[in-house]
Amino acid sequence: MIIAQISDSHLDPEAPNAVARLHALERCVADINRLDPGPDAVIHTGDITHNGTPEKYDTALRVLGQLRAPLHVAAGNRDDRALIAANFDTGRDLMPGTPFVQYSIDSYPVRLIALDTLSETSNLGDFCDVRARNLKRSLAEDASKPTALFMHHPPFEIPQSKFRFQFDDWDGVARMAEAMEGHGQVVRVFTGHAHRDASGMIAGVPAQSVPSVAIDLRLGTYSGAAEAAPVYFIHRFDGRIITETRIADQV
View 1 (cartoon, rainbow, N blue to C red):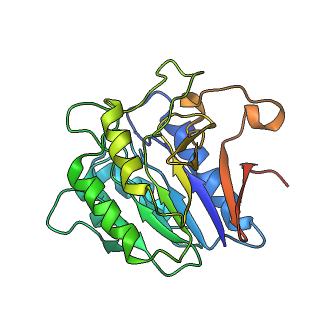
View 2: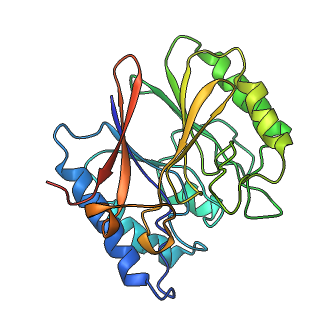
């Protein structure tokens, strides 16, 4: 199975770099469509728009709608939960009757579970008891199928970041880790929010954040063609997951 992961496009017509951000997303979509073999799925790990409105999502959908592979998204702190659920494929709702956007995609060789890490009080992450219990129940549904979790906020420390820890507190991460414990089918955690390539662990599972599609918001050091081009991740699963950083527009 091949998964393309993009994140943090932050589309906003009012931003000084609005045109460049839109073009960066267009370049990623075009590059993903050129992949051979193409991905089985595309994951956007949040902040599709900057402070989401219906008009901003209309713009995003005009670009993302050109993807040839199915698109699944996790809600970011700059997204609107209700508009995410209304405009994108959010699979099998794991928490009906709640505002949380947690869902499962069960139709691939790797089961995909989107987690809602939005805090109600800040732009940082949170994972309350309700969401944690739901994750634990969801993982217990199928212990045999390899499973990847995708979410917006990285549940690990990033020493090179100005904000080393990107949750409200460690309690939310501890609740997530406890829900994952004993579920060896979880093979990888994919995140956004950090705007940089960073990696860590949670509950013994490798976790990695992808650089932002928006080049003006991207953090970290990039050389060669990557300096002026958006980058994204390609995850290949063949018994184990191998991640490659892809430069959009590369031949």
